[in-house]
Image (cartoon, rainbow, N blue to C red):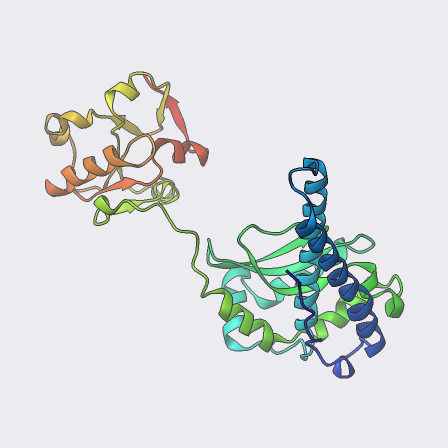
Length: 318
């Protein structure tokens, strides 16, 4: 496999406060060197005798390959982030940043603060889209290999010294300001449009309970915090609950094998949340039985352990 060089995305002579000399040197000597070394290391990996090589040798080469690949990809994104006026954001990306940061200016202040904090060090400042949560987030990466797992960078600021020193010296404030003045927001918006098409990680699927309404532990916590009345029923099976040491604060345990014995204690005036150990069958089946009886019942996804993982309050199970 051979990685191919990407043409320079921005037009260096159009940039404000960033000279063609700076961009040319960066592209040729830093991006070019990373790409060249990436191909060399990749060739070494492909040629290695896996049976004879030590695990340490293979690991070292693989770590270097990933570091160089990230350096290559981030440099390409950096050059593709430049070439605009930096001030005017198209509507779609402006709305997305406002949604996730409150204000475009707040995003800008946070992005610049992260860059200034990295001054004199080395790394990248990235604006990334995370399909898992459907939101944008700023990130400071102190080397090439740090990244948000599953995140898609759409804007990159190179804070390695080679990106600014021959023109700005140690004045990273001037360099950061120049970068911000030259962001190509139209290109950023196009990459955002591509990123939002990426599906989030596949969620837990239980086809047999697809029609049963669920509720997240976070939503249950919000209901309780708001003072809303909610009936929380722990339906962990007896063989499990008999060994349990804790129970969700505010919940009562009821035997899922004998729903008819306790269903009459519930009110139809308040929603019911059922849960089991992990959020699989028992909690779902309990919710179905209650819904069939006319209750507004939902099962809590993730069950007892999701609640505990969120540090939800529990009490001793007596």
